[in-house]
Amino acid sequence: MHTPERRLENKVAIITGAGCVGPGWGNGRAIAVRFAQEGAKVFAVDINSEAMTETQHLIREFGGDFTPYVADVTQAEAVQALVQACLAQYGGIDILVNNVGGPAPGGPVTLSEALFDAQIDLNLKSVFLTCKYVIPVMAQKGSGAIVNIASISGIRFSGAPQVGYAVAKAGVIQFGRVVAVEYAQKGIRINSILPGQLHTPLVDAVLAKTQSAGDLQALLKRRQARIPMPFMGDGRDTAHAALFLASDEARFITGTELIVDGGMTAKCD
Amino acid sequence: MFRLDGKVALVTGCGTRGEGWGNGKAISVLLARQGATIFGVDRDLDAAKVTQKIIQDEGGTAYVTTADVTQAQEVQALVDDCMEKWGRIDILVNNVGQSEPGGPVEMSEETWDGQMDLNVKTAFLTMKSVLPIMEKQGSGSVVSISSVAGLRYVGKPQVAYAAGKAALMQLTKTTAVLYANKGIRLNCVVPGLVFTPLVKRLADKYAGGQFEAFVAHRHKQVPAGYMGDAWDIANAVIFLASDESRYITAQSIVVDGGLTSATP
Image 1 (spheres, each protein chain N blue to C red):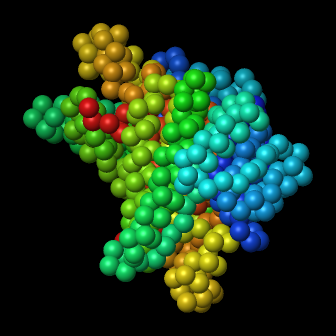
Image 2: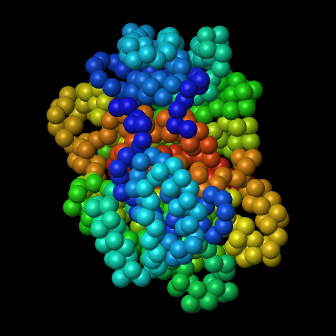
């Protein structure tokens, strides 16, 4: 039972949201790079082609296997097409990482109905759709690992009203549990990672505007104050957790969650 | 990142009684394979020595000793011993624990007290002696082995074990917050139904010795259709012990093949 030199050697991994809104380590980019380092063939999906350029550069630099693919994973036909494209390129699918998602600010009064619907589509339906078309491929092979990137916002109020995002992420967590039980006998494992308030490029590029009127430093200070550990993690921490859950080291782990939050959800003071 | 070279790991319950791979044995051997130096303790020195020999034969480094880790002085003595021998403690694995049958009516008060001592107080005592060392080092990872019995009723009455394992998880969670800004992480691994040499003794204790029927029943209880093994537990321990989990603290990783996600 030696841990192999490369932990995902020759495994084909679909990673959605594999680009990044700015320089640095977003979850999707970090997952794509870390998986490729461990020998995975990365089929990277993003709605924005340019966002994947740096991810591709980082992976090709060390000779990793990387195929970028542009798709909107809230659309069923687009998801079907991307699954076919992955099968055509690599001949199988061993790992699916559902990393697409993003918050919109607002409680039930301030969030528009259209935005609420869009939040559910982006954060939850995207997971339903990729699973709908990937699971049959995995079931036929009798093995597969699915990792959903949820959020601690799915289990706590985390500092700002974002009700659409929160309920969608709660849905992702429960989706993972029930589908895990349904497919346990078919060799398919499904788990969720719940990142806490990491310092990813999303914070600088989006949340500073939506949650802090453009004042990034004030936002970072507020976020750090909620975290017991003296630093904010980044996308690489999510990537290491995803790597563990996607690998055969976790072959008996399914239907559960891994919280990566520096202890934030362990306290309520 | 996954390597543990240069790190010292103190593992309680490092031996397996009888043939095969129990959790403590697999955890110790896997930690050593990743490069850690092992200080193993078990109440059964012969069992500990089997683990030590496997590690040494593979080219690893391990020292083992015997102690009753429900006793404060013995815990302090073994921690002192480890410091004298290896000079530091980077990883503490609390693997001691055992279940006794019964609900509150059937179980004697004495058994209850013994279960609390074995399943919770042992971790309290090792933390008491080891955390100051990790604090001085500015880093450390504590991994305690809990059980799904601390989360659910799992098919047999064992009220003290269940309460003790739940307490172990909360001891871990609250202590993790207290030590989060000192570079020390504390987490639990929560095994579900796992096929280890212990299952034979459980069959004697809970199923009148009907070993094969007991094993078949346990396999069927798991959504995955099979019990895990000690390596599944050891893999999760290694992850939590390594720097790859540097931002994970106060958590429990459930390793149960989907058992606790269903109420069939």
